[in-house]
Each structure stands twice: as C-alpha cells, then as structure tokens.
Amino acid sequence: MANIRNIAMQHCSNWNSGKCIGCMVVKKNGRIKFFIDSTMSDKDCIVESGCDYFESIVVPGIADDKTRESAKLFKKL
Ligand code: SF4
Image 1: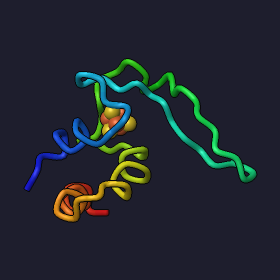
Image 2 (image 1 turned 120 degrees about the horizontal axis):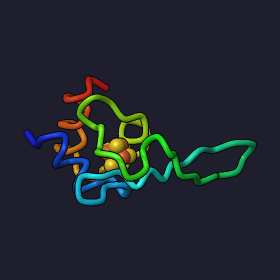
Image 3 (image 1 turned 30 degrees about the vertical axis):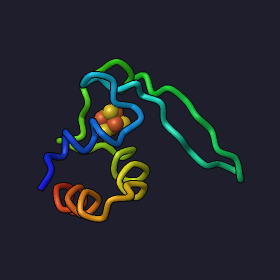
Image 4 (image 1 turned 135 degrees about the horizontal axis):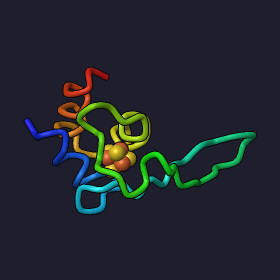
C-alpha cells in the first residue's frame, strides 16, 4: 500500500517539493474558477491531516485502481 504523502507527491498538481501551491478549483454558476488559497499557498502539504482538494479533486482522478483505493483507505473516503 502506498503512503498517502507519496500519492500526493505523484498525483496532486499543487505539490511543489513538499509545499502546496494552493491553487484551488471551484464550480460556481456553471463556471470553473481557479484561485490561490493563501492559507495553503507555500505552506507544507497537509494531506496527512486532511485536505479537501486532495479528497474531492485528486483522489477521484487517479486512474490506477490500486493507488486510488489506497488513498481512500488512508482517508477513509
Ligand atoms: S495540501 Fe492538498 S492540495 Fe496542497 S499539495 Fe498537499 S494534497 Fe495537494
């Protein structure tokens, strides 16, 4: 089973050498918006303690079944 931090490193587009870029995505009124979350930007990755972006955007997009299931087990999604 893969370590969740390694899964974030390999699959999260916000991962930057252990720091988070903080680029978030929201859908509002039929439009996709991107913004930088200053509470996450340039801070240490928080995937081990819980990251909404990872759980709602990254994990569903992981193509490899075993890796996606490992991520779900870690976070009990
Ligand atoms: S905190 Fe979340 S969004 Fe940022 S790098 Fe880690 S997993 Fe990705």
